[in-house]
Image (cartoon, rainbow, N blue to C red; front, side, top):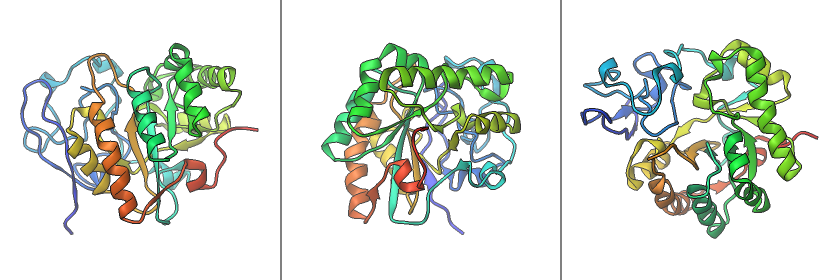
Length: 291
């Protein structure tokens, strides 16, 4: 079977061109579907096959993210199979897709994305980081005022599998409380940073009455791709019920300009292909907020 491919960036340290990553990317080289590190821009992703199809060597690993913060070598665990009603990768096979954005809000990229979504009358979900919410409260309020879903993405964007249970809870509760303080809503949807999960983390999150929302289409927009490549990564893998991952904020020195630039074409093309856009509650039939 010939799979489509993802566009992936060259090695940020030495410039070695990457190979193109076959799809589905988690079926190759023993990597998990949930291993991708979407933050920050130059995080070296173990699922990106560089240097003739293999993981970047340790001497090339680096950038602004420390090795201590990087998720461990992923295991082949199909979390959605273990928790089919609680951990969600995609929606039902209807001609709808859901746009989701991680790591915001900020005062640069999030407003531009909101402008494009408003111009095209599309609603999305924003998985927000607590300290950014605290810093940019007006942007969070705008997300809600314009009819988008706000969801929980922890306070500091840590790898939760490396934290004790009490710190996992604090990351989630602190963010939930800040969102509630600003917009009067308690989030019911959660996305773990990096998609990193363990059985203990899953049980902790579910005990807090959250649904865990992952994704099955990754734009890789954080990685310095062109707008054309970002659009191609989405359009070549979109399917009925897809949950699409993009980003609305990035680390210092990073750029999401091509996320913004790719978005109008992506929306218009998907509509021409017969897709409509649904929020996560509309696609999945679950509430966005706790009662």
